[in-house]
Image (tube, rainbow, N blue to C red; front, side, top):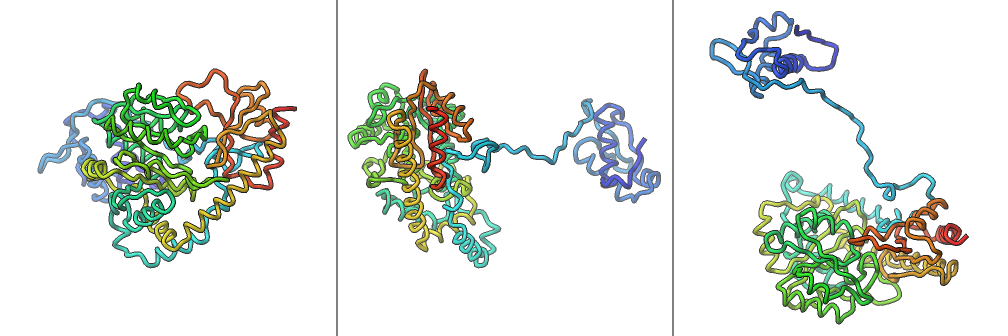
Length: 468
């Protein structure tokens, strides 16, 4: 029996609709039987005829009813199903990884890689530019779709910056803006589908990138590292014609690819009719030495795809990355992704374009580079003074992390667990290998989010955890 509740908060037409829908799905209402006329049911329920008509029209639209002109509504032949049992929850689980949380219970110092100090973001300047743009922007731009590959003004500013800082010479139209590294790699996977089925990566390498390639069906060939970069002979033997590398500060080892290796790698790409994906992920940070030129700057055969993001230099929340495609690949991109739109919000693009054009970007880079160098040098000196020959720093003088080999008999898991007991988070290295090493006494130390005044105490806590 259909009963209407006027106090439930649910619209009456919806109650009528759900009553008949559930009876039809459960088989309680027989196919081809008629429903009460709208006039009759409205009178019986003391509701308006329009309310009943709305419920019937919804059932009709979803195929539960059919109508016969001048005769009324009838139940359609529908496969019997158990009535749906809605599971509704207005609570969204917090899926932030423990190490990404602002605070972790029991942890005083977090040496997470990629974490930036809160004060490093130029919030006041960013707000001022955002307000100006929102006041001046043409409403037509807000309600329209943006460029497929990104706002021209921002691409022009990035082009200038790359030429001045990384000697990357390219036309602005060859830049494609994307929402971070994950989107960049995913698009490249799609771009090369049908051309390559295998991709080579350094071993160890950034594990997320390896997983993205695998999720797109690529066979991933790990290429071991040598002191001066990846093993070129092993690359040749792999049969791969596409490779992802981090030559200027290899992740996570910190190895710098030598000039001779870079030339050999470019020769390999030319010989194999292949491509090199150069991830220049933390090129803004170079300590106690001059910045290294990009691999792209040595490429005369247009075999290098240069990629980078603003996550390590400005803020991960912006989700803003980009790639510089060789002309032939840009032409292929335009063909394959003609219907794709830019995944970076236009407002973010406009703010960053103005931020760069007004000179704030260069001032910001100088400030964070000096700040990071101060933290880096202080941390390195504290570790060396406290631990001496019992700990070896590897891959420093660049970026926002280095590896620390600890010579106390503990393995990676023990090092991490004992540090945690003292309130310090350090991170594993083994996850970045294609096959975890049998013996590993190294941990990853990220220092981008550590404050200078806390470094002496944090190092003493690590010394206590590992040597006392």
